[in-house]
Length: 554
Image (cartoon, rainbow, N blue to C red; front, side, top):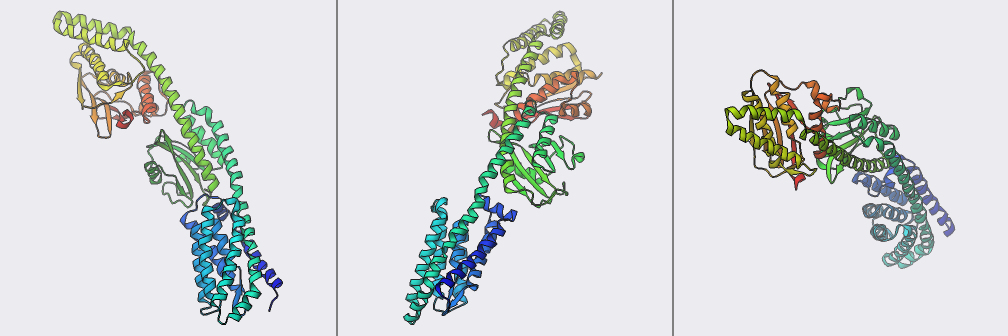
């Protein structure tokens, strides 16, 4: 029979094996990462529970036999697991190891006491993990472990038959078992030392995110495909990704990295994972991605970008090797995405202000445009001889149009007021061109507000660059349609039709001077409503439209 000192030594040897095994486990990146998380996934909890159940069962099998009793480290494994990883690990480990201890020695003098204290150990350790300050976990673990061993000794005395045998066992194993619980403190301190690295890692990742933000800040001052491409390139290089992309809710705006030659910017999003992220607003992580569009990429992190609580796009990070999306990288990328969202929103506000100033300047130019005024007056003069009544109507139209421009402000206006100005403009143009121009209105009853001079340039473009470029008469249709959750404003003509090359240049921010009016409206609509003009070639003619979400007008 071993002496008490020998038993203590052997118990510490077995506890040292647990410590050594844990030490090697926390060197494994994925296991170490799970320790640093504030909340573990169900799969991670299952794996950790299996590990500590294995520790507890091993503790039983490696116990020192003393008259049918086992001097072991089972309670050490249960309490350590419960304190470190919470109720699930503690309670399950206590139940499994307690039942196992009972089943391998049914009817043994210590089997029932060990079952009872194992279950209690799981429950108590779970309570400590939730209710006790983390800084006190190690000392609480030692105290609870010792109290549980005292309880085990008392239960052995209660259940022992004969009592003298129980007393003999308790006398031999009691002190070594109680002293052995000091190992709980060592295990908790070891694992907590890994968790403490989390703060250092968080600080490093925060610094990296801020460094990236500082590098990309100048490119947010004028957001376009070229600047977004540069932003993606900076992010890719700094986080050592294989590819980085930024999208809006419909199209890929920029893509940099592996497979870049296959991407055509402004093409529609094909990835179902990206569409699901936009719909749900939840981060998507795939450490073994199986995306048919990007089969070479094994890791994918998709983070939604939001402005004023609305999802406006995504940032996507790709790696060609599996399991590259670590927890620190996720934390950094989420923080970076929040910074990017804020920068994009600020940039959009600044660009709206700039666009408003340009719109005001253009409005001033429109007010004093001598060609339009002279042509309108000539049309009125020629109509005066043939139809004085029509001439009077045209004078009213011209005065209304001029008054609208003189009263122009930067504020949003009711759509019906904007349509009134367009009607005045159209009547003057119809007087000039007679049967060559026909204008139709399809207006639903809606209650929305729009910026000044948003529709009129589209109508002007449809007339001058569409219908009047043809020899035969043409039709311009101005429509405002109620589509339940949104309002669609469209201008359609049966003219010569816009060239696909012009549409591509507008979307690529590479616009010649003669298309600057249409491009300005595209920019304003994109900045204000998140998506620019939709321009479609028809047969014959062109359709230009944009949508206004009703809740944006609340």
